[in-house]
Length: 73
Image 1: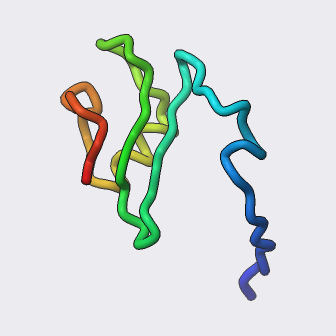
Image 2: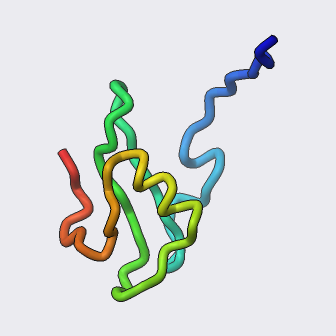
């Protein structure tokens, strides 16, 4: 039997102070679930964490170092 999950509406401001730190990642998804924008640390080359690479692969991105503009739409 599947676990029921509770959906909680939150805004970016609820979970963050409004600014990304130099070492943080942020993924913006559209209402259709498509990846619209990625914010990543600016220091390139960089080694992305395994969990971030896993998320990127879900969207067909295998080499984040080749992203020159993080806007995808």
